[in-house]
Image (tube, rainbow, N blue to C red):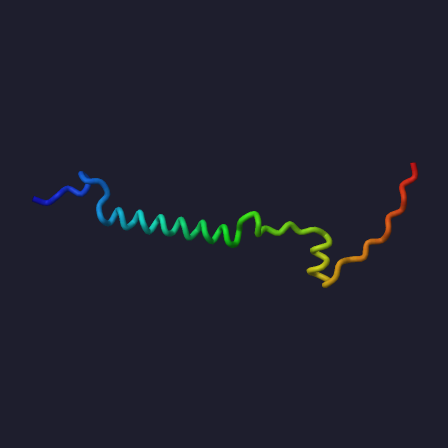
Length: 68
């Protein structure tokens, strides 16, 4: 008599597919944490952009005092 695979849970192929999906999900999470997590995000400022474009930070002129 041939056993019914659905009667005993996941078949062999179902378990293999589940393992492959689990490994893929773990790999995607690892790539995200290594390259795209908030710790690796860049928040550009005018100074950092000027450093990248011109190679040096711009010289900011002194501000005049505000009269009240």
